[in-house]
Image (cartoon, helix red, strand yellow):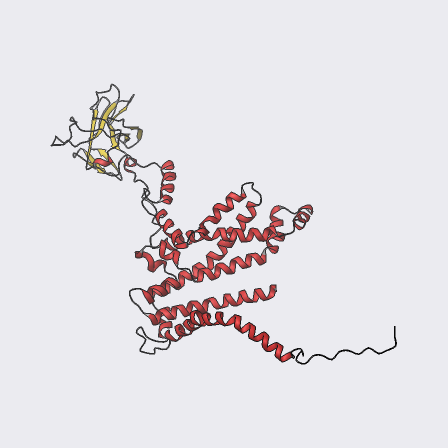
Length: 447
């Protein structure tokens, strides 16, 4: 190697690296080029409508008069809008906590069952349809008529099993021999003795309420040492004689007939046969009173008015829980799967019960996930709309109204009050801002 010095080649002209300012300018230009379409559409679809809605909320219905805060004052003075505010408060206080709790319970329980995939699929399935469609489904299920509404049909089946309805819903005596009312019982006015045959005629019974197994009425033969009789529909097509059992007249089965002594002590009861006959045997000599018991006219279950003004809000909340419980379950189950199993096993090894493991280990480790679900549901219930308008009939929408529905009805319904509707929209926006700030703060803390 020679001792000659080595010299570097000079940099070619024009090859100097960009300075710091040039580099920053180019970076900003590239970022601006990518962000420009987003900023443009956000300005058109979000920023401009927001600013214009705020401005419009200070004007009258027609928009030609500046009314200051009159529209905001009306939110808290109008009965309909105040009801919407109260209902939204109920939604905020109840629904997020319930959805999170139900999702947590489902997520924990599904870890211990072999058919968890099928269960999760069934619970999450309502999320696959729109809230409006789910609301229509629940509105049908909430129908008061047990023949139409599935919920009242189930309640009615359980009630009828415990407290069966009567054979008839209503009737009236065909003669003056029976006194009283169906609700209190129809009593034969004259006392009878063993060996008597009693005819208890009823009328004002619609043909469709006559039991299907009714047979032609028969006046039984006298019973030695007993009392017999017949309960029948005292109506003959073409005319007949009241109080007499005639051809083409039907007996009334399933009627409860009560027998009591003259001093009111009940001796027994009997149920009429298909031809309306009944009998009391082996009676002591004396006077007895015969009556048709009030349970004969026990009213069938007519259904709960789920869509009435008193229950409409809880009914909608139940439908909403049915939709969102699957979302909460899936999110919480994902967080549950990420919990280290050795931590749980260590707690069990130390002697902790399952409840203690859940309360002191599982729940604290799931706190970030539970917060996500809770805040998400909090934002959703502040702007709930579609399921309310789908479930609530028009006659009770004022009682079920929430802020988003009230805003839509006010601005675009029959009143077309854009000023008040804008004020309601701004009010909802103001309510959502604290929740959004809380969510942003949580994101920054996690980062």
